[in-house]
Image (cartoon, rainbow, N blue to C red; front, top):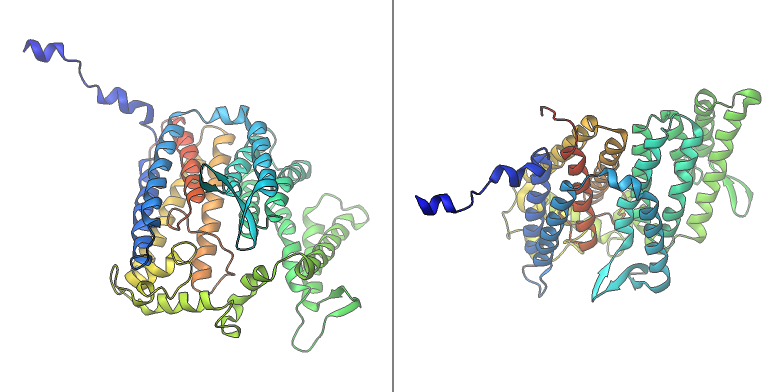
Length: 437
């Protein structure tokens, strides 16, 4: 009895209290996906002399510890340091261009203590924090704020694009659009922001019975692009504030024609051959079945071979015989499709839907706009990456080299996802107490 009184009581409640308002479902689901992802990586490398699955779990464990620490730290501190974070983000991207390590035609990594670190992955978190701070102070309800956000984003986006890292630059675009929409930007403005990219594609496509109108050697106008530009004239007229003398409509038209032609120029003079192949091969992979289309063809065959229930873990013939290149990274979903079938794919997608639902719930119940925008930025990043990655493995999206969050092998990507998760959990942890539904 005396011994019992002398021993200090273990106060579990006082230990758990700093994390008592975190979203447990949101925290546990990515951990479960990471464990499952490591298992699938093990399956893809079972007959190879590599141990990426072990690294996947180790980095995920480090990421979990970082997320736990961030969930305990007040996220408002990030607002005070957002310009420092923005500066460090740009500095790291410049450092890659100066002293980075090249691989597969791109210079994206910095070697630190023998490990390759990819700053463009961490730049996603940096831009989310920066834009959340800016839009917290001034919403996107006026064009001045929108232009300010675009100008701030242009520097890191340009540095990432020049590496070249087309995949991450696309993720940047998704983050900006999602956060601007949440910050009360006019949907018409967002359409106009995206429209030059669409125009760049359509201006080089002709109707079956029509050819592009060629003015100069490098300047042509496809009929589809002209039709799209005219539609954007209507959007500009209705949404832009410069109605006098039709300036809004003229601006929308000019934006699409100029953006479209710049896109054509970039296609002809800037993009690397492998980037062009990635963007176009999904439309006709059989055109080059042993080259650019090989990844996609093998991925589709593997997913189709799984049928309803799959072959079973470690039993997929395409996966075990290494028919799908880069299956442990960008094409990890094809291993799920082959070994767990259609049902397994649905379960994985359902888990990602739950994660996104919880992210949206945190954004809706955050105590201030800054926390809400942080959650929406992370949500935009995750949603875009899941849609594009799954889409490219089944042939519905370009092979952009975007990893599947928490499942694809990639140390920098894994840490980035858990850092983002920790920030969102901090938003959940320091909000007013809410009932979950």
